[in-house]
Image (tube, one colour):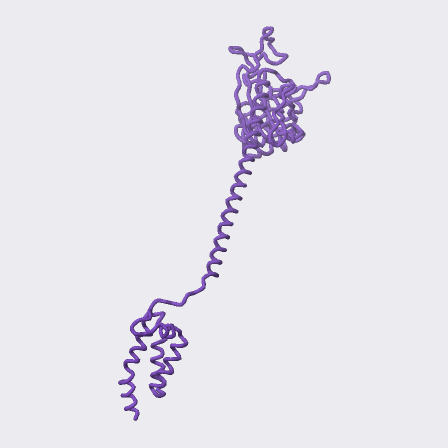
Length: 365
């Protein structure tokens, strides 16, 4: 009975199966498959139900083979094999990509704006600093030229330094609204061709005291003037000279050498002076000078003050030539001068400035 049914099924329905599967696998309503049948076949629920029912009825309950054939006609598997997958909604992914793009662009714009702002601020600060430097140079040059041809008695060994810009000269206002002041102190040696060594301290007007300016000047210039006339052996620049120069003749500033011209210099400071015995190579006792900011080359002077009729003047006696030794940044050894006596102030001059006279630098010899 079963064999007859199978023979009847295969013989009578073979064409139907071929026709059914052929219509299912085609991509268009052709090969004797009507469009209505094609639309139904493309419906997954219709295909699965039809196949199960059709095979179940024809196979008479042989479900294992029916399931195998049904899997063979699985529309999802057929779509995957043919490379045609059901469509997906990518709207969410597009929104995420757009958001990432906006964030990246915003960060780039913010970085460029910050860079531009920083560049503009740096340019403005550079311009202001350049203006201050230029104004300080100009003011100091005016003071240097004024001191060259005019003997300024008030600046001799002045500690703290005194104003030395020409009367009536006003420095330009710098970008921060301040002006500049220049202060001077002079070491005078009338018996030497290096007659005057003048230290110029230029500071912003915010520094109102000369001592503060001398400690931390904006610009420090040290200039040596030769007041000997050409071919002469005496200076004729000071109001009182010996020998007396010819009437109406002045040799102020016959020569000039700029020893130091530096911004942000820190002049040396003396914290103590200690007398010692006469060392080898000296005919006078040696002194040990303690302080800060000592550098080579350095010179040491012993400055005595003299008061006559209520007027105080200063006389500077340099340490013997070759007797000054810079031990380190905080110690200098020097021999006492061969002339002068009494209580004096020891003054140290280096390329970074001249020490200011205080009670800590005094010694009696």
